[in-house]
Length: 483
Ligand SMILES: [Zn+2]
Image (tube, rainbow, N blue to C red; front, side, top):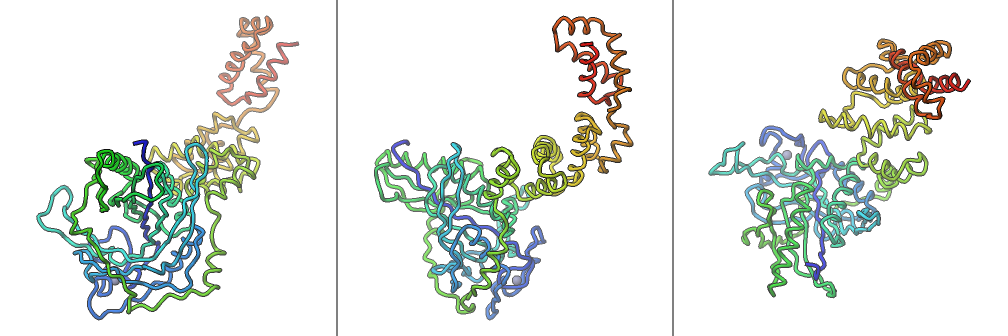
C-alpha cells in the first residue's frame, strides 16, 4: 500500500442551533413524536411559500467567520432535485454556485506535534430531509415509515479541500471542527442526535503522480471511530484493485459498521443529476457589511488561542492546556475557578479538575456542566489547603463530601472537625510523646538515617487523628532530635 498516497476530503453536515426550522416556524426539538413538528411548508405541500430563518443565516456566517472564510455578500438558494420518499417536495433547498461562506481554513495538530493547515472550500446553508424508519426497536418492518420532523431543519455543510492524507488526520480534523463549532455556539454537534454527520471522499494515487485518482464517497459514518475505520478499509480496498491492474469506479459507498466494510450503493440511487437552479420562491440573500461586522466582533476566543493563553499567561503545560480547551464548558469552568482562586492558583485548580473532578464526573456519567461542585466552591477548597487550614488529605475528604452531597467547604470542614492543628505547643506535646514511644526510630535518626523521622511523623499524625500540620510536625521533630 505504501506505493500510493491517500487523498481525503471531508463533507461535514452540522445542524444549526435554531429553535425553528429553516423555512417555517416548526420546532426543532430532538426526540419529538414522529411528524409532530411539521406543517404544510416543511412537508412540501404545493403552493406554500418558504420564509428564511434569519438566525440560521447568522449562525452560518458565524461558522464561516470562525473558520476564516470569506462571506459571500450576495448568495442564492438553489433547488437540488431528486426523488426519495423522505423528501416530499422532490427537491432539497440548498446552495450551489454561491455558498454563504468560502475559502476558510482549519489547523490540525498531528501526532508528532506538527501543525497542518486544511483548506475549507465552502460552507453552505441547506435544509435537511426527513427520515425513513425500516425497523421499530428490534423488529424489522416489511414496510417503511416516514418521519418528517427533520425535514427542513437547517444544516451547514462544510466541505474541505482534499488536503487530508491519513485516517488520523481526518479524525483530528473532525475533532477540531466539532470543537470550533461548539465554541462558536453554532451547533451542539451531537453525533448521537444526528446533529453532526460526515461523508469522506477517499482516493489513492501513485506517489509520483500529480493528478488525483478516482475517488469513492463514503457515507453513513456515524462515529469518529467509523470515520477512521472506513478510511482504512477504503485505502486497502482501492490499493488491492490498483495493484491488480484494475480501475476504481467513482461511486458512493456505505460504511457497514457491523461488518467493517464499505459497500457500493445501488447505482440507481447514486446516478444523480440534480439539475440545480435558483429557487424562484426565495429572494437572493444580501448581507450588509454591518451585519457581518457585528457577528465578527461577537466571536469568542477559539480553542487554539485559548490554549496558547493558558500556557503563556497561566503557566500551564501544553498537555494540561489542551485537555482543558478540548471542551468549551470545561475551559469555562476552569477559567471561572481561576477567577475565584487567583491566577497563581491556576496549576492547582487545573490539577484538581483533571485529576479528581473529571474522573468522578466520568464515573457517574455526568459532564462538567452538571458538576455538583461549582467553580467557586472548588476555589474555596483550594484556599483552605493553601492557608493550611486543612491538610491535602482532608481536602480530598471534603471534595468527596461536596461531590456526593453538596455543601460549602467551610461548613464541611467545621462539621467534620477537619481543621488542621497548627498550634505549636499542641504539636510539640505529641512530638515528645512520639519520641518517648519510638526509641528505635530516634536512635536510627541520630545514627544518620534521616528517613527514620517519617515513622515519628506518622505517629504524631495518628495521635492527632490526621489533623496535625505535617510540615510543622516534621520541623519540630527534627529540631527536638537535633538538640
Ligand atoms: Zn414546518
